Image 1 (tube, helix red, strand yellow):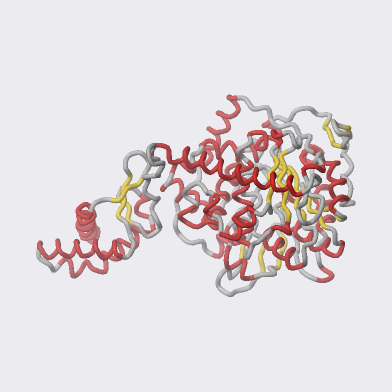
Image 2 (spheres, rainbow, N blue to C red):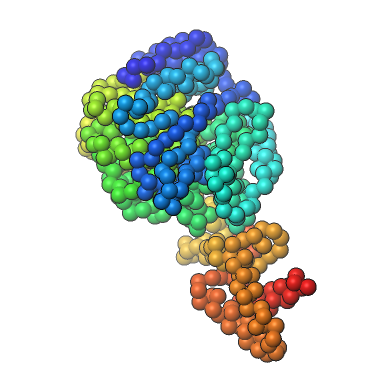
Amino acid sequence: TNPCYPLPAPRGMKRTREGNGTASVASQRGRSSASSLSDDPPASPLTVRSSSNATNELFCLNGDIDVATHGCGGGGSDVIQSTAPVVSSGANMVDGESLLARELSTLSVQDRENVYEDIHGVRQPTEETESLKRTCLQRLETALKSIPLFSVKESTSADQQQGWQNQTNSARAPTYSNEMKRSYGMAAFLVPRITSDEHLRLVILRASHWNIKKSVAMLLKYFRVKERLFGKEKYLRPITFSDLQDDAQDSLKSGAILFHDANSGLSRRSIIVDVYQKWNFQSTLSHAQAYWYMSYVVNRSLRAQREGVVVVSYTLGATIAHLSKALELAKLGFADAMPIRVAGIHLCTSDSRLKSLLGLVMAALPGDVRLRSKLHCGSPIECNYELLAYGIPSHALPMDEFGTFVDGSNASSFAIDNTIACCLERDEEVLKLFYGEKIDPATKICTATSPPRQNDVLFGRGRSYQEFPGNKRFIDLLRASKSAYDQMKKNEKTQMTIRLVNDIKASGVRFMKRDGKDWWEEVDDSVARQRVAMSFRNLSRDMN
């Protein structure tokens, strides 16, 4: 395959000309249906050698999502078992384009047509009816309830090796790692409104073309990756611009990522433009956070949800160090967990010597995303001309490696201001929707208590409360003090429970209960003391 030109249309498809004379691919089969869509890429476990063990130690993403990392965070081997191709140096280096050609040749005619139509922007979205949405939401809910979600035990080596498996055989039930189930289950227990959010579920259903099995896997992986990127507290609430690391915020403000909504009239496709020269990141985490956050901004557009978004990445003028960072980013395996449907990725470079490294970046992408990726080598204007064949107009793209648009710097500044304005508008909307009655209408201040942390003590009954990490540590603490407590007189026991409550709260632990409306609130010291005394009695009863 030649990276500079569109792939030939498969049998059953014809090439057409549209509005501005740009080439596109149209199917002769008509509109897609939700029941006949199947885009699963062939799974072939291969080996990836990490170029940065520090990245694996920081994220440990690959180990518990879709690959198994050995010695993650523990100084062990940096060999990763992955569904991505072999990524190494020297003569054994995999050519991303050759890999793509081989994978495309293994697809069915229908699947190959879907890929080509996505890349060229002519795939018809599934016709949505209210009945379809209600049915798929109900089936998704049923499928999620059938999975034993709440588990706080750490993954074993066998669990990590099993990881997240995307089963292409519909007769076999998909399996999910303990870490994926734990992340989703903890969120569903602590903040059920965030896991049952209908908007999020519809976004994921559209991204998976209404495939229920894919949607379940994507939803579980979504919460696992979100927790890894933003932490155990922030993943329980909507992510806003202020949650990004400082260098990620600076990069977005400088125009590292620009978003063109298809509804704006600038382009018939929703486009994300990534200008590598404008990135001001110090870590792969910042880059990943920025892309993750922008997926929320893009999905404000219903059209982008249904038709997908095209990512155009300009690595023009980038060095090997820059592209090594991009390779680390691709190997994190978060691209197919973002709440967004990627219709195509175009990697552009002006240095033919870096083309092989960009091929490695392509090869490290998840299968569904890699199948929709293209490499372009040439000057910015040459790359932009090639992108016309994919329905991406030149006036929506920069004309040089510094992000200057055809109309000059003013157009670039307008695009940056428009993107940042979209970010802030989205944040205001989502926070108002999430917190609702907890926002004081007079002061505009949120009065909601932050969700429980892992070391907090929660009041309630059931296995979920018993297995909560903070409650388990609380019981262990009481067990250590039980022998002394049993030998005390009544007033001494009271003083001991008061002292324990004070000591526990001084360490930053909160005693919390639900307020009856899915929110949490701290309890008074007197209620906490009664809980300590009752827990001591329960321990005595269990021992007898």
